[in-house]
Image (cartoon, rainbow, N blue to C red; front, top):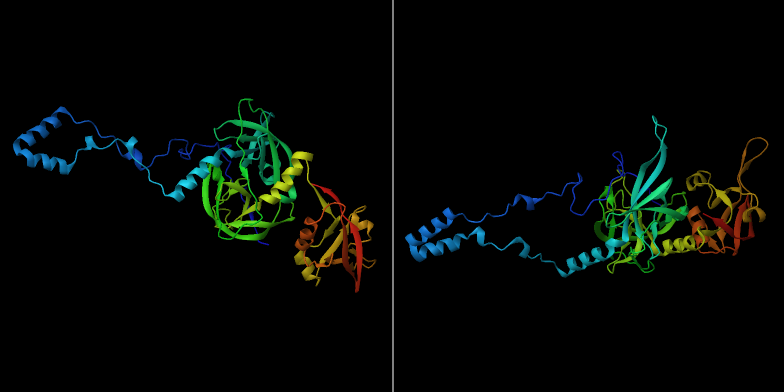
Length: 411
């Protein structure tokens, strides 16, 4: 597991909510000024200029005409509107992918209620921003949970610059997924969902595209490749998110919740984090696989929450277990009434003399070795509520097998 920095937290908001700007805008809101506006339009030749040219021609005849032709006349240059931009087939494919996907990417602002110190009025103050995507034609927006965490109101800005409030349908904190519902969308206004792909057979080296709003710069496209698969990062609750996609496509603050697309323009992941000491892009970005996201979104849309199986235990961090010489998952507590408690699993305690008495140590589930908490979560993610597990535990020097039936955990 690698340390990570959640990709939206460094968004500068000290000057208010960064408004999405058009693709040709500068950070100051004025049209971007590049080399083009230093090239002034060529003025039409004056009568004096025409007279000079005619005089030159009369004096020097055909040779003079040839010299004028060699020198060229700015007034005869083709208009800029007729200039052709040449794109390779690869560039054309990228441009088409961006244009087709752009309407499905949105800008999300997290607003929090604050009381004004002087007037005591309640104000909506921007406290964060990120990206999101249109999931379906019903106006569901998918983003990261950490993008909207703590929000009293969420504002969604569409491609055309229209702002719409959104309600939170539900969240999956463990997998850092949130589903929003657009509000106030006019009847004649339709939304364009992204094409949902699959993350089942991704290959290292496969080309990918990230679209988002880094540092408030709307609809920024970056490209790269899949650098690795099967990575693990901590979720918003500390529970690891597994099978994460690693990419070198630039992912910066504000990209959180935006899409990672394949060459066909299909969604394969949701950009969520970067590995960087500074908080800026370092060439190591992470995206939650779309198959994991789809599982959470489907439950949230149907039921408003995510239900997944649980044992009902708290266990020691891996580093603490190693310091105690424990090989396996050390149970700190079995919550009263939980499946683990009802199966007789014991937590860590102290005896009458204050000495530490280690709890049960889970060493396997259904015969598969369990060494860390990540192994335990991986095993649970493959099961469903109501499944019966054969859990092997070590209590002192004694090994035993305990049958535990998984219960539902609502997140």
